[in-house]
Amino acid sequence: MAKKMFLMFNHSFSNAQEQQADKEFNVKKIIDMPVSLKQLWQQIPAESATLKNHLAPFKEWLCEHGRKDDLVLIQGDFGATYLMVIFAFELGLLPVYATAVRKASEKIQSDGSVKMEHVFNFCRFRKY
Image 1 (tube, helix red, strand yellow):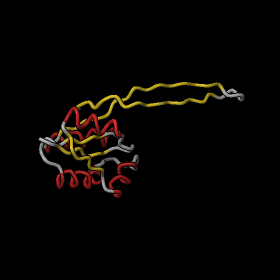
Image 2 (image 1 turned 90 degrees about the horizontal axis):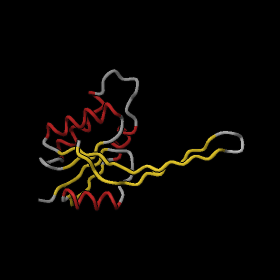
Image 3 (image 1 turned 45 degrees about the horizontal axis):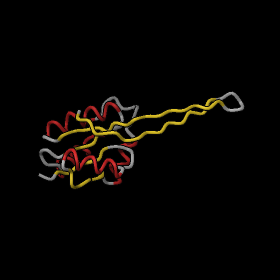
């Protein structure tokens, strides 16, 4: 049965990721968060003692649009990610995250500082 994948992360979803989602999980529709939710996900408040109110709109979005066995790609602030993964399981959704091969290089600059460059290549999705 064809599934949907909801995106709860701060990056662009690549063609390689879309192909892997289809190949591994039979995902036929990718659903990005509305712009207002994307902005909230990018600004998880560090000063808040709890994320309950902040995460309510994300929970409402998944409740309204998600169906049992749909996938949700969740990555971001550690606490928000943890809480949303638990919530996804409660809804019968399959929470996943993207893994990547990371290549780093460093170059010593003329002033003695070190310039680091990181290149990430998507590898696969992993279930939480």
